[in-house]
Length: 147
Image (cartoon, rainbow, N blue to C red; front, side, top):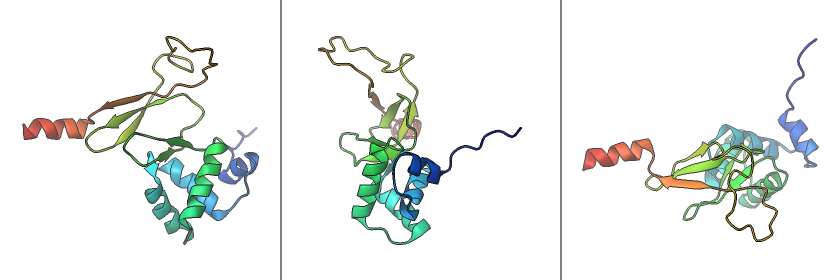
């Protein structure tokens, strides 16, 4: 007996109720292959794969993919929106204040929502977003060498 094949990008798009287009498939693949990419980087890489795609179409597709839970939008203060393919878990992020690199870090404490609010004010909390700010190893080393 052979192991079941993982779903294809086409299967995932259709399963999420989205129309399969070459641009959407390329966009989803690009986000998943990248590492917290901004829209300009995504657009450039998608255009390398499928040719021209308008900025408006790019934003609409990213919105649809995010709403469908196929990609995650990350809004960091002072930075353009970034997108990642790691979804379905409640992971957090490390962000470098110097160069802007972003890295995933697993949940702070076990099961979602990871952290418990001191006063949830009656909210049914299902997710927690944590961003650890600091300097990445490269920037820390560069800062030490310059001192």
